[in-house]
Amino acid sequence: FVDFNIPWSAQIQFSLNYNRIFNSTLRGFQNVLNANMNLSGDFSLTPKWKFGGNTYFDFKQRRLENLNVFLTREMHCW
Image 1 (cartoon, rainbow, N blue to C red):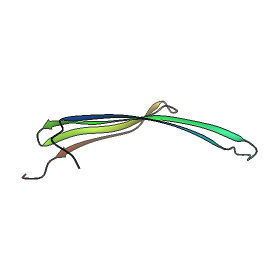
Image 2: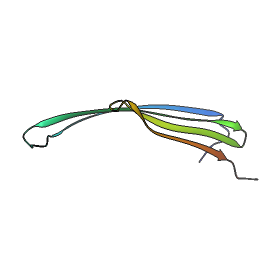
Image 3: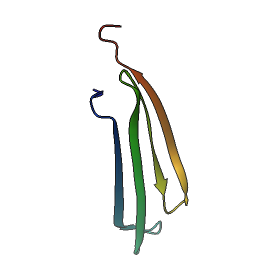
Image 4: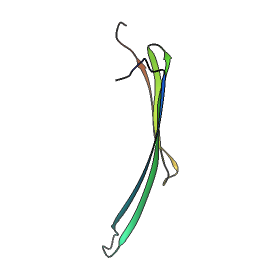
């Protein structure tokens, strides 16, 4: 659901994960630390059109892992 009454929105989310798992020899543990940041937002181009997108940055890989953009049109009373 897209609320066309809100002119823009922005969100930032940060995630930090720590896992301790068996290593490949099953004789010890391996520490795994992952972190990523999600960015998303949208803004109204006109009262019936909205443009936005989202992406996330993986700090372990040091790159953007996914990028999505969208364009939405209100279909009520076309």
